[in-house]
Length: 499
Image (cartoon, rainbow, N blue to C red; front, top):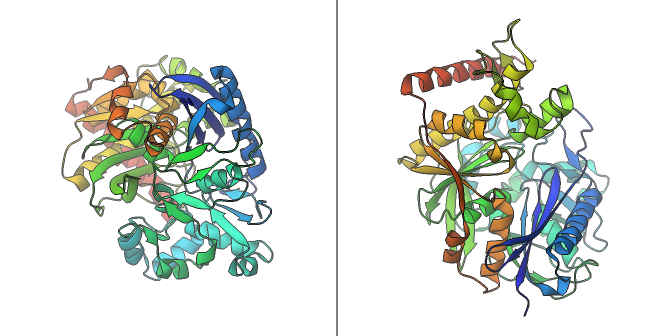
């Protein structure tokens, strides 16, 4: 009997594969990084050949490390960086250009124009989103307009669009299946999240031909079987798909209304389960589909900070202050505070709750006494400040406090960051033993979709590593937040003054 789940977690800087038993034990794991391409300031691209190569390598290595055969796999779950946009030739499977990554700001001017024309209220009502270059809609139109002949080919039905989940499914099935799940569809600016369907009017507004769009499917159901993938046998069911943040919400067993999690990866993403009815944010967040399981759609409030772990990578790769990402915590611990230094990590604009596309990173409060340790600590604090803004907005929208915050992602391993986060929020934080909740969530969804498990089983598989209780008094907390918001005002003032 096949008894293992393969989870493919295709992320912004690398692809991870997990082999998970039906009891929830991770038996094998592998990660393969791939290059980021920055052809112009503010532009971010992926070569999908490199991306797909990283998926294949990770899958092969994870299966080998688990000591199993590919034929032992009972199901496949996929989770992915969400808004990243790929368009490929339906016959050959070859992309027409590099993928435009969710961080890319090349369509900011288009978004500004659409907002100036008064379309934002209509778009928010239908999609739960704001008009921003973050999402897929304007990326699709840019590719069709800027790759020679692409729009004409799209109109003829020769091209297919997909977020990364859709691209991976296409590759795993030899190009036979073109689908996306509800969570990824809800990040495109083209999906009516009430009806869970592509919206003709939105497609016209964003100039996207409907025939390039994939079929929308549930998050836990058999949507395809492997075929001609090369490194996997034919016939394995693909039964779980969710965008990375929704997969983490599921993987953290946030099944009740009010349950919230934050994933600290390249960016930081906070989501709260708000149940079966969507709720429009009035505090700068977006509404998204959390998952569709067993025919039932669940919604979530989401706040996105575009730069989190990427700020640590910048200290490492851009400034050379640290050699590895793990070095930041011991460096930051060399000082007891940031000594008034505040880092606003708006290296790709400000996301929720500000949605300032033109903002750029700022560091305030530098003196002759500022050291690398102070900057390291300010970087960790900057991440925590961003997340505090998201969670405080969430409590206002939902009209309920957060009882506990569940955390995951690579940066969640940082004790200093987690303690400061708990202090800023005044809320206890739960960290699981396995911080790769995105991959585990994909595995859980695949098990449910293949009728190998029930959703309730997921809650029993989440094992706690450590609690972080808030220790900071209200006066100190308010002083920290005041410094942060002063730095935000300065950052946004520079953004507003751009020529």
